[in-house]
Length: 173
Image 1: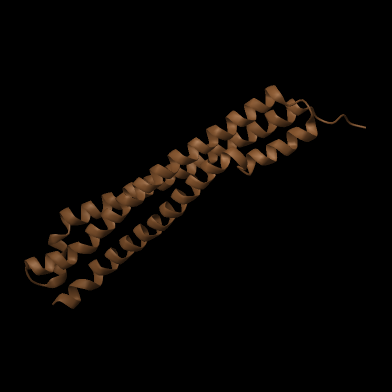
Image 2 (image 1 turned 90 degrees about the vertical axis):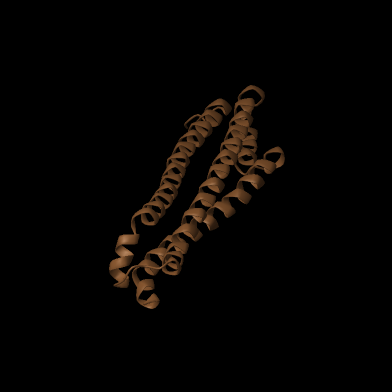
């Protein structure tokens, strides 16, 4: 019959898994922030360079009114993407705080817990962010919801701006 793992083996295994999970989450968050930077860059590029294209689509020189109405969706999409980027950065900070609090709790278990069954029970509490870790989970979830909705809104704004750039000039003629 195989020997059951020690409390130290259980805790260090859980800590390694949490570290790998955190690396995956960090990579995912970097992709999210990179995408938001692209949204702002695309909007800025359009605002700087689109006047010549709008002139062709309008079949005349665009008026100030035309330029305003064709530019507003791009300005809104850039601002929305910027806000989403800021909320995502705050969420990343909160996630790091939660992760480090969880790692400190796991590391303290290595010193204080020798019983495998109790170590598993305490690890469940740490991974569920119960007790003293609840405040970190609550802060993370709040920013996570806000960042998610702002990211969705930023994507919708960019898509709308693209559609408006294509169809808007025909409505302004």
